[in-house]
Length: 395
Image 1 (tube, helix red, strand yellow):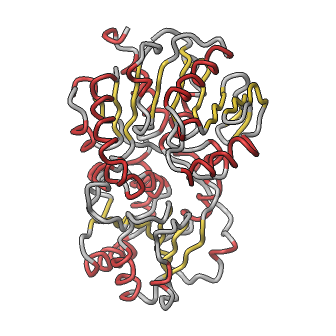
Image 2 (cartoon, one colour):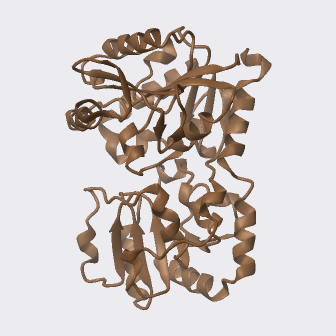
Image 3 (cartoon, one colour):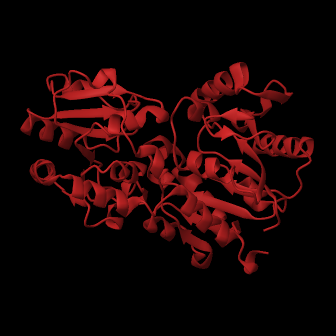
């Protein structure tokens, strides 16, 4: 890999979502790539909308009001912004955000917009780094130094993309054939791709230091009785609501707290009579340590299905970095810490595991959990990724 290497990154989120405090693997990888001396400028392409509803949201967020920064180019459907300071840190002259809704009309228009942005920034042969299986045209072009795909979940099994399943099947095949390197967040995701030699399992990581120390008790946790059994993340249909309700009803003396944005598909009303269940809403990522460090148990009550088999929950690493005992359903990722995660497949056993986790918890165990996750930092993950990209076979 030539140095410094410029990157065109197709994001799985909008930049504005990251700025509002919603983070994911894409955010963390980008944040740490920006600090690397061998990486030059990074052009982040805002999530390309495919539905009219998402297109309106993208237009308002990224074009009408816009990403904060120096606008280098703008027309009716496109915007290029230089972002020197954001939640990703201060990176003068290094981070650029390309926003467009042209994907609602034509992939050719999107491609033309990419070329215009790269020409304006005088970027030649960038590395393509994509998180977006919905848009694969760049993988079929000879415009990039290397073509990298980072597979986060199996989108074919995501509830939001069921109408696009056939398209995704085709696109994953194109990626498998045309990408130079494929990273996967979960080991099981490797089966999506035929060319196994170029597929590398690189799990999620953690910014370990940010979860250490003492933090103020959030106002909206005050008045909620201990012990607090907590969950952090987007509240969507991956959660087993039936199990959560049963466990909450079997443990009225415990408080079940959910921190995260609630998707419209989730009916919170089923918990209206469960006074020990609390939904606190979305919190900025920077505020999450205030919540996790005051939980007594961290839970991952996800359904076990093809979608959750393709995951590697970020929250698992964050729970452990806080020293929390963890109780989870048997989803992908927990096998990395077999001695530290209690696993339960049914309501009754989940309740029992929470009780036992509370009973046995102590400072020695909390230290053990922190030490176990300490080697799994995002710095380590990025080092692994970049070393793979530097292999002579890719030169």
